[in-house]
Amino acid sequence: MKLVLLGFLVALVSAAGNDPREEFGGAGTGSLIAATDPQRPVLLPEAAANGGFGTRPLKRPASPLKCEQLAVCRAVYLGETAKLAEHLATGANANEPSLDRGAPLYVAAQEGRVAAAALLLKAKADVNVQHRCVKAPPCTLPPCPPRSPQLCDRARDGETPLHAAARNELQHVTAAAKMTALLLEAGATRGTVDKGGKTALDKAGCAECAALIRAKTTSEIKELNNELR
Image (cartoon, rainbow, N blue to C red; front, side, top):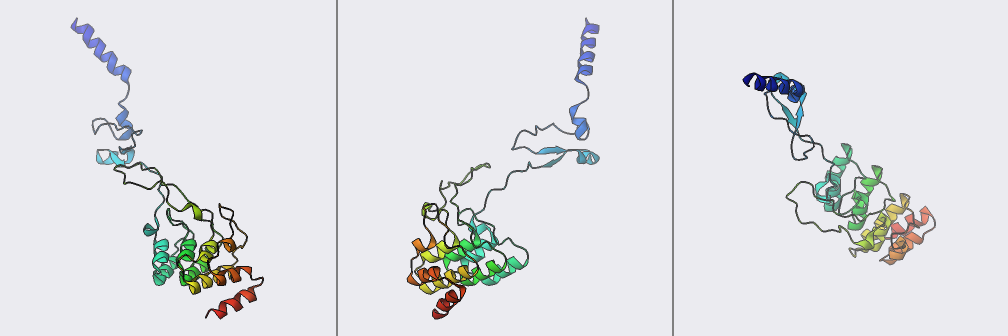
């Protein structure tokens, strides 16, 4: 009976084959961790030389960041022109959009940051970039903070920087008009419509902005802009 039991155990071990941990650095060095578990580390073969398992987190898709978390967007929003110039000089992306406020040039136009907008345009920012309302991405790493399902006003969906400048939301006519002139001189398209079918002229919140948008030539835009000084 003992011989039968011993034979059965030998056969069972032989059928099992090699210990699967050997390919990760040898048996007996640790427990095998399933790579399918997103909360667990992945075993690495290069740790075998150290007599154990190496670990690294599974790669996760990067979530879009809010304006305050992006160096360029934050500098534009706060009007920190020197910091913005430094970021752009070191290769920062002038078009990197934030999750909540959109592309840097759109932020500059909305906030009346004329100097920041000029720097962004010099760094090849897209003058006709359209703002997109987005929903907060799903939280994959609990605990998850409470999030608003909608991160921007639908009335702004599809707007360009020219829309944002012409709206004159801050009620600062000179800043809005100068921003409008700057964008037009940089090649902003007048006829682009937002998701509501409105052009920048339709949304113009100051007479000076409207006059600039109606201007037919660059020289006329410059003349109107000079009158603001």
